Image (cartoon, rainbow, N blue to C red; front, top):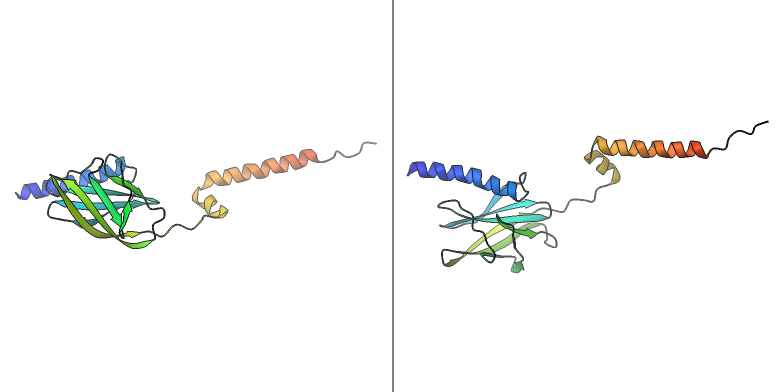
Length: 165
């Protein structure tokens, strides 16, 4: 039985990162939101989007499919969109900070309610032109230098030639 526990941990450490990679969230960290005797609910927040993963605790298989999971934040329904590996939703319009999350998962002929909290990030401030240059590195500096050179060439070409005697 001890071998099954090690195998379960191995599956958890391999399956969840693979699922995050498939849904484009490889560098975001999974946070356990809630758990019951049969299920674990994990959330991955990345930018303006989040994904919920409902996973069976005994064999670590994800619960996927339309209509299998419904959720609400602070009593307001949360539109979930199955993305093949989990349930994606937008963070647009949701206030930052700790939010109460309730999720109903349909599995094995039952509907199980999982409750927990999720911390939504503050929106990133608008980027200035200089911040964009810093963020995109040397490529942006090359473009800026090219624009300056083109402007200088245009100014030189518009110069009037000296009068000839």
